[in-house]
Image 1 (cartoon, rainbow, N blue to C red):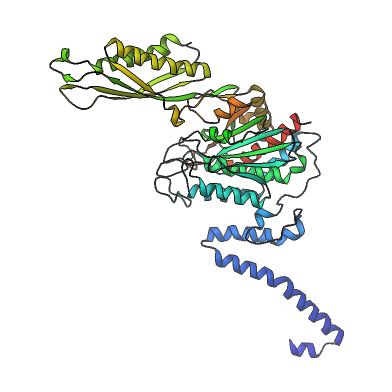
Image 2: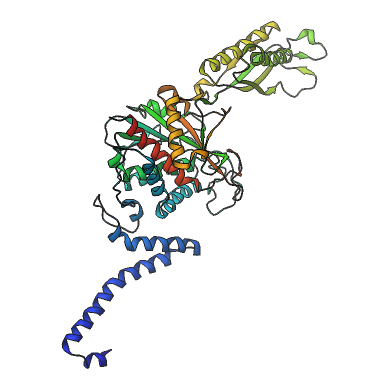
Length: 496
């Protein structure tokens, strides 16, 4: 190179040196990024993901705006900057199919899908039980901070209430539950639960990821929001009635409507289902203790037979549904435990029975509760025994029915059909399962819907609460888009 330079004119030398200097300035930072990324990769798959991000990093400064004036930093760049280029489509004045298409397009952007999957996997690896969702809550707050979304914390111990939009009415809420289950995961995959005996076996990790995905979309489209979106990240759906605690701590302040989703293995991935009116049953549990007088089985006249009283009560309980309820109004009373001891020749002094009851209306639900107590106490007295019945009301084990408001159901149906197509929205029958979203639906108009995760090729076919439960992660961007569209379109249609 020195010999060649000596034979060139002075002006040519200057030009050549300028080109060399410019090349060094441009190539050195990129090499550094590549070197750093490759060295931190733990596998070929991870390296591939990082290379995708590097390509994105290179074009960031020229293609993507930085409207919130945050310094670009590698460790948080993909969350802190605005990933979505501004659109000339104004959905605040006119809502049409293009608005729905744009939200779905944003949700399916490669960098957004990568991000939302990584959030779900991180939460899945560290499942936490009711009111113990400390790390999950921390992950949510970290992402909200990066997105510059304000929030209130703590609520109900680990819960979060985040706010996006104008801060003015109307206020519409989206809710995701955060807790896991005391189940040992049996699915062998890279992101299997790292906590023995605990697992996200009901999809709540996906619910959180989808709501964070919706938050990201809504923040990027904040100028279109004709009101305020409230994001509720709730603890303790599986046990403890976290919804009641969130309501008590002010989660529904100013909110006029609320929506939530649950993943479902009964529907193919991306299919959305719901129904008007009662969707999920009210659920309660009971334990009855019948007391009598013990005695030798060979001399029953010297005892007060608790087993006979308990048996009569079990039979009588069946008549509540078969003879006292409307046959077109489904109800369930089931005795699931009958314990009088294990002696072969002694009539026990005490018999304990337990079970569950379900109904689709609040009126019928509490009528069942009343009649179960009466049957146990009155049947016990017929056989000279006494009975006490505990419905565990102090332990928050009673869930009222989840009832969809008709207008809110129609809103979900309309949004879903625009996003996934008319044939991919299903009207589903009510189910006897229970959900503590019901507490929200008792206070304000609400709608609960399912989003399918069934994919037989992947093995996503197992019901919730199974150790084999898994999800098709292709549902995540669809779920994020659905949440975002429900909220934004609600504000458009019900805002001033």
